[in-house]
Image 1 (cartoon, rainbow, N blue to C red):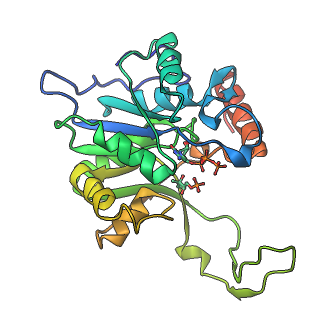
Image 2 (tube, rainbow, N blue to C red; image 1 turned 180 degrees about the vertical axis):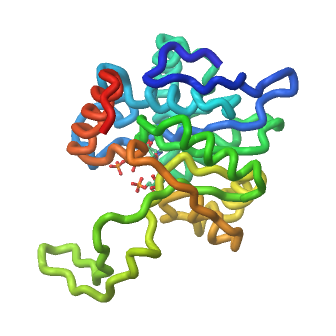
Length: 259
Ligand SMILES: Nc1ccn([C@@H]2O[C@H](COP(=O)(O)OP(=O)(O)OP(=O)(O)O)[C@@H](O)[C@H]2O)c(=O)n1
Ligand SMILES: C[C@](O)(CO)[C@H](O)COP(=O)(O)O
């Protein structure tokens, strides 16, 4: 795959593609509006350090030595624009398909576009533009070692309360305090044996509505999901403050500043 430029050093090993076709593919759902980020272009096209978030996300995953194919799921009415954007950033090998109304629908459309050679599928949010390639490779390695479904995640820093949700401004009654030591905040890329993920999306198309991640759909099949350590820089840009943090992380990377 062609990668125009990098924010960190690419892995040294050669990319494992050949005449047989790619074994590992990344589906990047990028069709969301980004309502929580506020008015503006679709979130994946908003800029970070002068470059659209989607381009960061594609480069971050394509840079991982294990990845042979990237498929971007574009806003339904914006596939041509995304194609042009990728070409302009010399990412001509990246495939583009139009997305759907929900994240789940968008991922399903990306899966349908994969060639038969693909055995391992990663699903990575365009909204997590700064994931380090080491995290991507760690997820792929865990799948190739035999785990059917792998999620990167971090321990939860805050104490979490379960509540009786209220839609008005009234205080919400607390119904419990889960043991924090058993909680993990889940990130992407999530990695899967292709057959398992395809089965989850095929079987759970109607009743899977409401699933906020792909691993959650696989759990509903009764298939085991395991967690590997995620990375602080793989956070999701969801609200305006996340964009401020992402700009700061990018600036530190460019200046080679450690935390
Ligand atoms: N119909 C949708 C909805 C979401 N996504 C993608 O799923 C990822 C995670 O979603 P999120 O960050 O919640 O994005 P949005 O749905 O855009 O955010 P919001 O809920 O604030 O509108 C994003 O890369 C987003 O583009 C998608 O491909 N198709
Ligand atoms: C897939 C995900 O990024 C894992 O944390 C998350 O569940 C997406 O949820 P959101 O509702 O789109 O924020």
